[in-house]
Image (cartoon, rainbow, N blue to C red; front, side, top):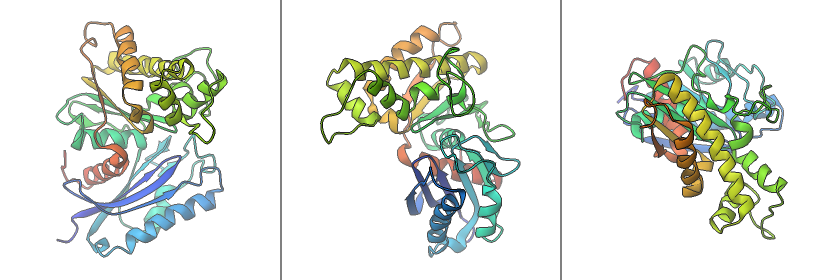
Length: 314
């Protein structure tokens, strides 16, 4: 069938992924490349081109109706530009015009990566059927998106729900975004590992020094690793509770690489959320791990594209 697919791009601090996606959320022709996050704008654009080049070469490409992009933010959906905090080579980078030119003028929809995970989880994941949800990605950075009144709410610029840059520590560390004490400065995988290292934790020789390694040490009972995850959980809980208090969501869904720590993150997060979500109308807030996993960014970017094309998928 013609025009029954969209192309999706998921652009983050560690990977650039692409796929063709149908109206049922099925992914075809999946591509992935590492993000050259510390390199030049030209090298970053070349990496996106590599992914698009493989997608446009797929035999199903003639069925593609539009392009959806979920990018680390902030993004500017109106201008079609991105300025990811964790990708310093891109500042006000004209991603949408570049992609549109590369794909022959097809319509391109841009949202933040947190909005993309919200779209994915509302379409196929833990927030399916919920009228109000905050869906988060906790990885190299921390992002989020909102579902209100049963519909995705990206906001005019495509950044609504960007919980990673809510300040939860007035005297906290500077954040690359320019503020201080943001959730991301405490709860991202990078900063969980940084906290553990600062306290004296070290992996075994040849071991994993990232947040995943810290999680492994926490499961083994290392107090410094446990502290790093408890601190991250406290920051996340404060941000989630503030959001729930403001807009009365029903559920908070947490995905991304850090969420793969499982109970190492979710046990202290549930405890801290009970301490912060204390008003009567937020005490029943549900908490769940994301279901759509590593495909969330692609599924959500596709959902945003289908929505912009007037096709209902969720």
